[in-house]
Image (cartoon, rainbow, N blue to C red):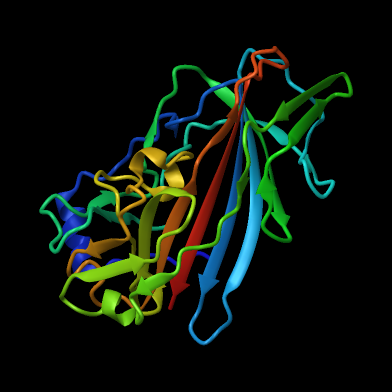
Length: 313
């Protein structure tokens, strides 16, 4: 579910007037993208809508990062260690010049950091086509194969992963450890999302601890429409520096420590908005296999679990 984040027209126009925008569409990549690596991300997402049962989804995403000097494979598939699931890896996709740019239809106004008042240098405006915070150019040009599959239930992340390509290559990884996809955080505040949207006071977001989480991140999005049409997006994130959650493959450098279970949204950021979603992201400990036996230049396996608890209005 995607909810457009709309900034009030007056605030948006002020930000437009005071910001040079972002026309930079130079090639950019996720901060942690490195060649010779297979990244697996397991996600448990819970969405709670008013007067409805919670909706739970489970998913695995695979990304194989390859240097441009690596051979291209016509067929590539990954076997997961449970349920006989085979993921065809589509690609190769050579990352385009516009990676990391705002490819939406309207500017994004980004705010960040917990506190009572919004700092004077916020919001940061990201123009359509502008560079999104959280990306930087890698040391080496790369391409990727990728695949995504929905899972019917939570899984234990353990066991052997097998990849085959062109019927002539095969590679197996044994996950060095095990982790169960843990439950979503229980958001205890706000009870009423109108408190986030429509008051001039700071708003607190709080949640119960999640066993197994190494840290948390909170992301809030809201919309404001003029004549039924979106005029901008607004995002608030709990990080101490500007970053878009969708722009970074690995968010661990931006997480709050596991002992932190509440944040404060500064006043007036979402004043006048009509709908919102509040997401608490819990991150699990990364599992890795660092075998160095060469196979299609791949040497590393990285497995991460991410859990989103989202309430929306």
